[in-house]
Length: 294
Image (tube, rainbow, N blue to C red; front, side, top):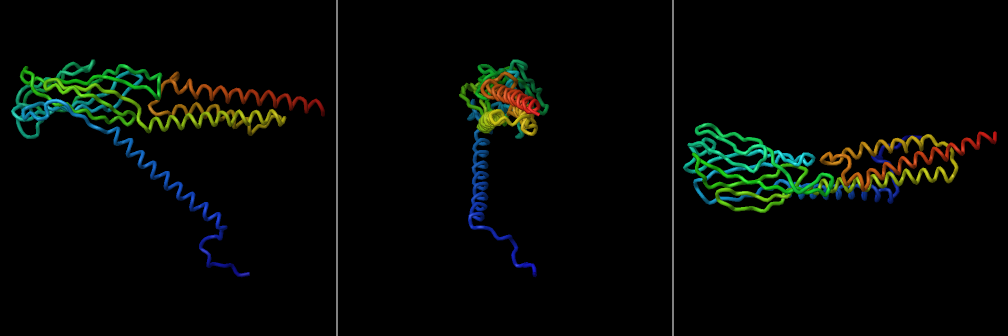
């Protein structure tokens, strides 16, 4: 019998084709929604705020970028870039001051930043203290702080502008500006991004689902008196360690003992451990009884 070569695709039932088309459409829709949520999250995260003497021609401009929030240490890495304009600058670049520039900060680690006259201004890193938050509340932890700068040129206060840029992918910034011309600042609140919340809620669902699935399997094995079902026991034991590894993938690496642990992880581990022990005890009882009847 000659083999047909005119089919480029195996024939299928119309319902099969409909299911395939539906699956492709579902994947495409989920991808588009994911792209939209990613752009929405990115737009709320990388945002800039400005306060101070923006309309003054002779001033010092300060840009402070929040590079990384260290919630466990209650501080944040802040990169500060200073530039001068108008009468305080040697040229249009704004990075060569005519006179010595000193910038006072609200940082607890660096009180003042000094920039000598005639030398190129380079960015400097400092630490920002975070108050009003506790990482034990993860993922609902929020932190507040005050970012304030004041600039002196040749020992005299000068008009200053301050811009804050949030570049930490794990936190979104909310601010309230203080428009002081000589010492502008912001009251800042830092909280977890939508992406972090989405990941954590997914972890809640997966951990509880896996723990309840293991418990259901153990109860079925015990009710039906199946004995020592080694593949099932292996799956249960593997789930116990898989949960621990999965918990450690939580965004921001929260320490053990946070709200995430007390509301799902520790319960899931306890349920899985109980299921393994229960299945072994019931299985051992069945195996001993069967051995005695022989």
